[in-house]
Amino acid sequence: MIRRQLIPPDLEVARGEDRYEVVSQEALIKAACDLAVVIDQCGGCGEILVDRTRTQIPGEALTTGAVTTWKDRTDAKPQPEQTDDKQQVVTEPTPLKAVPDDGVVRDEKGDPEVDETAVPPGLRANA
Image (cartoon, rainbow, N blue to C red):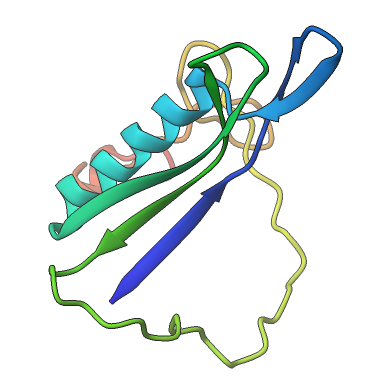
């Protein structure tokens, strides 16, 4: 299995009169860290390919794009990504219970909710 992710340009750099759309170091580092996390969790191997362009400054090139690739093994073949073909049903969301800053879950009246299953029936508050 092979999975790829494009890292698009996210920064504009001026060199004299020319302007270049480039991939920032932060974006490239984040992509490398994301790839490292996938390899740590799933195994396999990864690579980062960058596209560079020369500027008018001799010996300078800027990164204009990058692609990270994860493979489940070194001889992996491209496969389509598995998706769930079932239509997802959207239901009405159920409201969450408000939890005050003290961390205690309270009922509609504001009283703390207490699990009384471990309390003997004769000693329960609702007995």
